[in-house]
Amino acid sequence: MVKLATLFVCQSCGEAYGKWAGRCEACGGWNSLVEETADSGPASTRPKTRTTKSRGVAFHDLQSAEAPLPRMQTNIAEFDRVCGGGIVPGSALLIGGDPGIGKSTLLLQAAAKLAKGGSKVAYVSGEEAIDQIRSRAQRLGLADTDVMLATETALGPILDALKREKPDFVVIDSIQTLWSDALGAAPGTVSQVRACAQELTRFAKKRGCAVVLVGHVTKDGQIAGPRVIEHMVDSVLYFEGERGHQFRILRAVKNRFGPTDEIGVFEMSDAGLREVANPSALFLDGREDHTTGTAVFAGLEGTRPVLTEIQALVAPAAFGTPRRAVVGWDNARLAMVLAVLETRCGFSFGGKDVYLNVAGGLKISEPAADLAVAAALISSALDLPLPPKSVVCGEIALSGDIRPVSRMSARLKEASKLGFEHAISPANKNDRQTERNFGCTIAKMVKLSDLIDLIDTGESITTQE
Image (cartoon, rainbow, N blue to C red; front, side, top):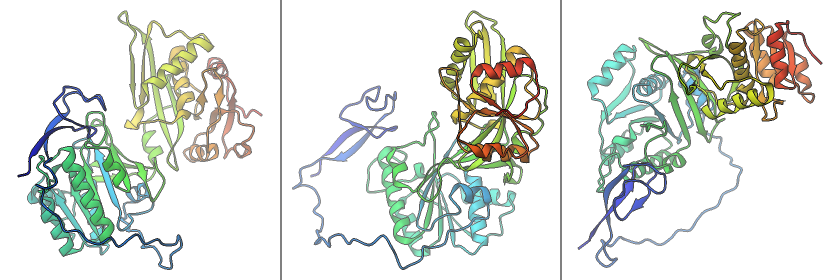
């Protein structure tokens, strides 16, 4: 008789232990170990499986006479953009996001668009009933689309139905609710999530069907379950946004068929998610010049230049310990910029609270935002505005030098298109394209002290050689 061994598996990283512990030694997570069972009997007591003769491995050339299958277009431009120009047949996508952020709404809209285009689409939900999905479809005006709906959590019946119907596009909402009867673990555990994701990915590759898996996220913002799931799939997308903002950001962190770090911008409304063709204009909506503590950052999100407003407030500390609050940027990066301002430029923030915010709910990770953050901090500390209609970008070194950034011409082109007339950027002698400034006058910064002089004197920006 097969003996059942008890294992304790970490639900964050998948590490297995022989006994329970309060803390996982592999990832450092607390109270993340869950008891699971595994077959551990001797080989003679295990069920014998039929062995087949190995067929060997067939190698192929890099070139192929067959043309690749065309991508499936959802006609949602922002979604297709993040996917690399459309959904590749036979691919597996993983979409994660906070609860209630709009993942199911976005995928239902994409499924309905594909169905209208003639594709055979299946939507399988393990979290909602059929009537709930129909109610959402009626609210979005998609009730007349030919989308096959099903509510099931058992993996076996789902695969049998998909093999019978042979759809072109499948949505599984969500991967954490599925379970396989081949395992004794509960749904949502690491072993169940890994096994179900592997079977669905294998089905997508074998049948040429695009499969989208919806994944829950942890409190740290990472997709729940073992990290190996992200290695199995072809693309990993994150749906981001703040509950207090109407903007939603679809960001690609892995894509085998397109660029990574590409973003798509959506606006949440009563009729569902509406794509935003020009996110720069939306993020800067309502902004006024001559406001102290603000700077417009000319950034890049994937291949797209995006202008966002960075807001800073430097105020006297009400208590003994100054406070540092950051929304939309890296807290450690802010500490570095403050240290450079204090050490290299003589600004003192020791007894002051510092608040930093990226308007619109966008999260920025690009080092080129250093100079814009410093400009907003200096403007707030001096209570002086930046020159009107100006954009800022540049990376700050620990020595106080301003370092060049990539694709400066694309940033200036986007700024000029939105009516900005001036740019504060690093001096880059090797980039001759920036001299064709698209109608923007450029103030080229060498040291961080040059930015302080520019704001303190209040002089107008003229192009510097």
